[in-house]
Every structure is written in structure tokens, then in C-alpha cells.
Image 1: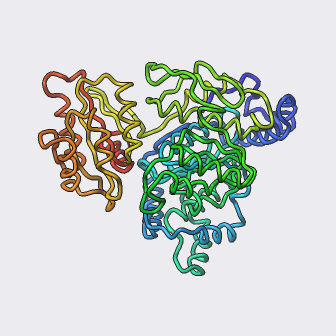
Image 2: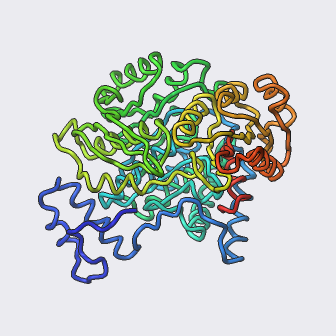
Image 3: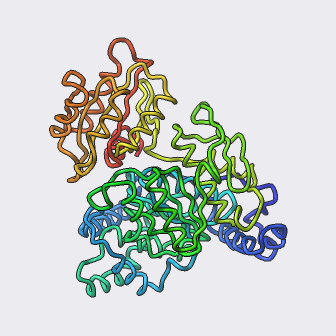
Length: 506
């Protein structure tokens, strides 16, 4: 993830002992020095993170077969959209596993949009300060192993399989004791927490699956709670207003924690602040205690200046597009500062060179990701109106397309009209399609809504995603606009993941 620091010993040197590294860090916070020393001695055996963002299928046929068997077993459980709002089952699993989630401190992330990108940024920053990290995010773009990462790289398929086999007897034990079996997401959460304890990691970066209070991840006692922007999504489960949704998401705020609060609708912010007062948590608000001071477009991303809890961090290159990613970066920086006690306990800044290297290394697959040129094809996993608006603004700012064709495949349970209305100003034409999952909205149903938003002459229907991509690329190449036209594939993480594979990025 980052280049070695000048004071770093050669990891292969047998004299690079735990005690020597602690001595080397005597000017640092003593507790942090011990944690870092332990992490660095582990790296002597585990090697440096590779930063692979989206792994391919295992090359070994037997490993691939074993991974498919695990995927099939997990798929036989309740899916991520079928929920029984309770942490009873996951708490029972943690109990029989020996509470692995309490073996390390954690940073917990909720919100509606930007959670995964923010988690990746937090992870990169922690790696830059030589802490060993575990990251748990969802959903995945292409491979289920993406959801559990160690030191910035998705867990190896072999280790994923081993972790599942290790906890499987305990999962079955809990299944037998509960009215409902553990769900797909609950088992994966248990796997992540067990894998992090086994590694072991110095800190876990954990993204909620949905909501907060009763989300399966919410059996950790995080010292830092991060709330990315809240908007309307999953309204059938979380509430129909930002305030109601904030009420569910505020459940990750634990007693005495620090809350990093991104810019929010007023009613959502009020709910979060009230919860913080109730549990005596400290709140840092974007636009008040931290934020984006300046940003300008740069080749391959943007150059930003961030105001953190400990001061200003200038000239940071962020290889991601869109104002929303700059705001995610400010939230991530404040979260890491809070984790290190900066702002509340210490009045100092983090090392600017480490910060710059960390942000420059960030990858966020499927988030305004360019996967092809001539014509340019961009992937973005926006799946609700707020996310679509951020994507539309980002692509308008970062790309000078003379003609943009949309390829849109959505899930059936989303505010599809709102999403399409956000994209209408930037799409010259739209090709509606559907992904391969049962949750996908039927292409003809989606087309009927699209016609109401775009008009009949701007809508084309291609139920197969490969046909939709081909049609969009053909439209983009029309009228001698080959060099200035582009294609944006969006509407769902699944659609983006499948397009990524079809375009040879898997």
C-alpha cells in the first residue's frame, strides 16, 4: 500500500526484533508504538500488502471447486435482503467462537452512500502508519473474497475456504439453537471477525450491511463510529425519512466513542447528535471540525487540501473522481485521526508524507472506474438517487464527453425513477438491461419507467448485459464522435461487477 518509511528496518533482518522497533518509536505514543511494533514483526513473515482490489477466480482448479462449494452453501442461506432485525444469532455465534471481535479495536462505518470508498481510504491510511488492518465491506463487485481484506488485499481464496470450514461446526451449532438459521451475511460477518482475530490485525475497519442497530456487524464496540451521508434507501426496512433512517444507523454509536459525522440532512444530523449526547460520545462534524478546504481537477483524479482534527493537510492527490470522493477522504482522515486520539487527546497532525502516499494508493473498483478507452467506458455502482446525483456530477466534472450513453440495470427494490431522473440530464441515450440475479428489475419494466423519464426515442432495451454493452458502445461511436463519446454503466453493484467481467477486468 505504501513505500517503506526511511526509518524502517529491513524486514528480512533477523536482528529487527520487537524490542528494537519499540525503541525506534520512543517519540511516538507508547501504546501505539507497541501495537505498531507487533504489526511490523508480523509483516516480516507475511510480506507487504499487494493492494489487489478485485481478485480473479483461483487459478488452481481444486481451490476454485472448493470456493464454489462454499459459495453454494452460503447461497443456500437467507440472502442479504431477507432480514430478521436482531443481533441475537450473530451474538450467539460470537459467543461460541470466543468473542473474536473483541480481540482488536475497530472503526465502524454506516451511512447510505460512500461507505466502501471511505472504508478503503481509512484502511490505506492505517496501513501507511504500519498498522495491520482487516476490512469488511459489502456487497462485492466480482468475488465474494473481496468482502474480507487483510492489509489492503482481499483474503486469499484458500484462507477464505479455511475460515469457513473452521467456523462451520459453530455455525451449525447456533443454527440448531435458533428459530432461524444464520443468514448469508451473518455467516460472512462471523468469518470476517474470526479471520481478523486469527491474522491477527491491529484494527478492523467494518462497514455495516444495512442500518446499524440490528445489523450483524453491530456486535463490536468500536472506538470510532463513522456516518457517511444519509439519504433515502431501503425505506421498507429503515424508514421513510432521513431522520428515521438515522435513528437506525445511530445504533453503531457506542458509549464514549468518537463520531465522525459527514455532511447530513438537518433532521438526520439532529438524530445523530441526540444519540451522541445520550451515550456521552464525542462528535466531529464535517464543515465544522473537519472538511475539504480546496479541490481541483487533476489528471487521473483530483488534488485536495483537507482540514483534519489536527490541522491542515495540503496537496493530497486522490486518484478518484468526484466531489463526493473528496468529502469521503475528509471523513476517512478525521476517522483515522480520531482513532489515534488526535483532536480530543492530542494536539498534533499526522505525518503529511504518509497521508499523501496513502491517499495516492487508494483504489475503489466500480466507483467512476474507467475500464476501457475508445470509446471510454466508465463503471459506477450508484443504486439510489443520491448516489446517482453524485455520480452524474462527478462524471460531468471529470470527463468532457460530447455524448454519453447510459447502460442501466437496477435492482427491483430501489427508487428507480429517482435514479433515472438524476441521470437524465447527462445521458444522450440510455440502454436499459438487467443483471443475472433474481433481484434484478426486469428490463421491460425498467424500460417503461425510462421512457417516462427520457422519452421513447432515447431508450433502447437489451435484456442481456453483453448486448447492452455492445449497443451502447455502438451508439457512442455514431456521428463521428468516436473520440468524444463515452459509456457509463450503472444502477447496481451487480450490474457493474458483471460488466467488469465482460469487459475483461475480472
